[in-house]
View 1 (tube, rainbow, N blue to C red):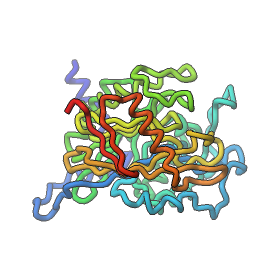
View 2 (cartoon, one colour):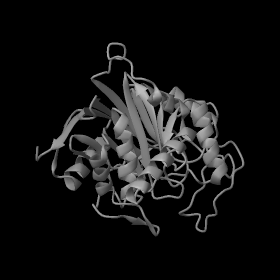
View 3 (cartoon, rainbow, N blue to C red):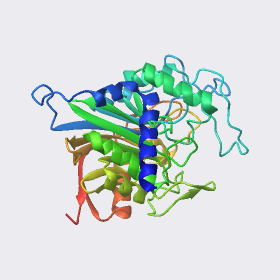
View 4 (tube, rainbow, N blue to C red):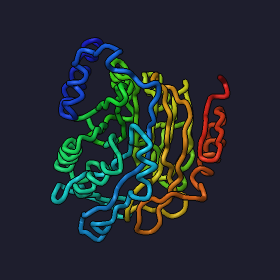
Length: 366
């Protein structure tokens, strides 16, 4: 019976991925070219950031930046250092309409609707991979989910995390990079389903050179900066055990685990030579988000990864948000100090060494 279930899940994953991005399926079906024709790079650079919500036009335009405000301009040069540029797209892409979710408590429930022109701005800044596994992508119901996928595909951007598009791939420097993402929310791959985690990640690992796994998990806010190594409950929802999730994903074949959801920066980690970020904070979150204190600082991670997925070294470009603006480079390196402190307290079994903004991290047990 288990073998039948596995076959059905594999068929489901293949079928739904066709909706996500047909181009990658052509790549996977091609006869591999001789190694002399397709030379794989020995390493790639992955640039990763956390939450992105550049303004919402719901219920009106009062929470939108000016049309000519290019919020990402101050950090575009840093972003483009990556071959893969990844972020969490926090909310649906839709110019108007949709089926807004009902909010019983407006102080803890928000509805986001990001206009389509933002996607071109994200592409211009270099982004080529997104997680859409989070608690806001369904804010406008099915019309929002469908249009988000449509617009991202029109801009040739890779994305994953919904049950309709569980994974995606992108070929960079001869290496096939796979992406999948999980969250505890309706329509997303379930962060609390260990069997689903293993099967989806293992499948990607079967044909990709490097597998990126993203998650939206952990409790939210400044009182939840620590990784508790247990399931975190927030507003009555089980937001997962992110420490265990990261290890489950890497055991199944993940090479990098990138977290978001708490809206603050958390510790970093390494397991079996694979890099983990437990939360990358609020990167570009115009209006609607608390960006005071530690909620307004976030890293741009520049990760150097070998062709077999092993973490080599990295760099943190520290950013801050102020008032009604986008991220800017923080010359005070505030988020780096936060990462060092939290990693020392929460993940003492790793050796994290910073030299200015560059860092190495490895298990002390090695």
